[in-house]
Image (cartoon, rainbow, N blue to C red):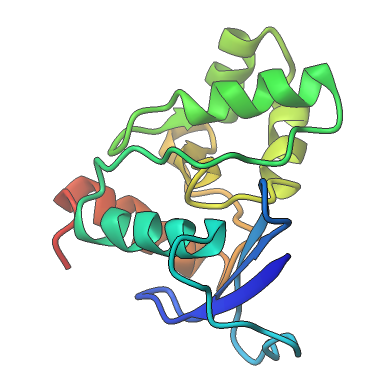
Length: 159
């Protein structure tokens, strides 16, 4: 089990794994204290691989993540997670459009985004309000973080 803290263009990011699967990624917001008991991820560990892949994404927003994630708590949750993950880098879908694709409702999509334990990897930042309104974001500094991620992908990465 590893909890690692890394710097990122979004601010500090905490990576939590159980040795076999990634349990969560948490983008810290303004004034949010870093958790106690963080490790430096050992080379070859899952946390180290997650760090490598996150940095690859920050260099190239088209990077495709390949990390073992803790399963969603339900089949429906897994289906909504897969629908969110299918949105290509640099593109967005409204809550309603994604709900139609996933055979769900916009509120369920919103809840799946709000409860997403893997921001960036499962790109809930690509889900926006109707008419392209930015909507909400539960990671980091909220809308500021979501806007940064969308702009990063539109630029194609390359900080």
